[in-house]
Amino acid sequence: MGSTPPRRPFEFTGKHVVADFVNTVNRRPDFTRDDLTEPADLAEWAVAAGLSTEEGRVKCSDGDAAQFRAAIALRETLYRVFGPIAAGDAPDLAAMAHLSRRGAQALRSAQWTCSQTGFRPQWELDSLDGICDVLADEAIALLRSTTVGRVGACAGCGWLFVDVSRAGARRWCSMNVCGVRDKMHRYHRRQAMAAGIS
Image (cartoon, rainbow, N blue to C red; front, side, top):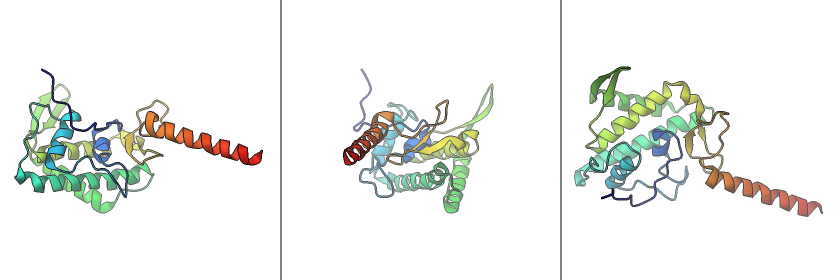
């Protein structure tokens, strides 16, 4: 028996879980679609993102409202950190301070496991806070890595991504969506210019 399919087709084009979490709205600053509108959405997203399994999915209740609000606040904090980085600017200082505090909170609740490459933190993903622990830790790890220099923003919709291409020249969240749209826009503009000239 297969797993239950998600209620919506979450999109994972960011090549990093932090970018994909930030990209759960369609466009900033004025988004018209938010994939995370209630606690169950975040639990479902975590399964789709591979952070938890269908069997281990967080069972949400009315008491999760505060944790959910904190998760959305973290999402917007991550945007204020990585959005400017994608544009070549410095991150928002208040957002960096919030992320630092959230990362410290995550480490306090971690269980440490030993592997051949050293000790690694792990979290029980049985709550929305546990999901946010992982996301905060992943965000800080990204900030501290050389990969942070490859954080970019889609030229079409503004979604964040980590450019894993060899050339480092990625411009769109998806070539099949914004890339095609951009090429069509430029094609029609050239056609209009040619018609104006003739």
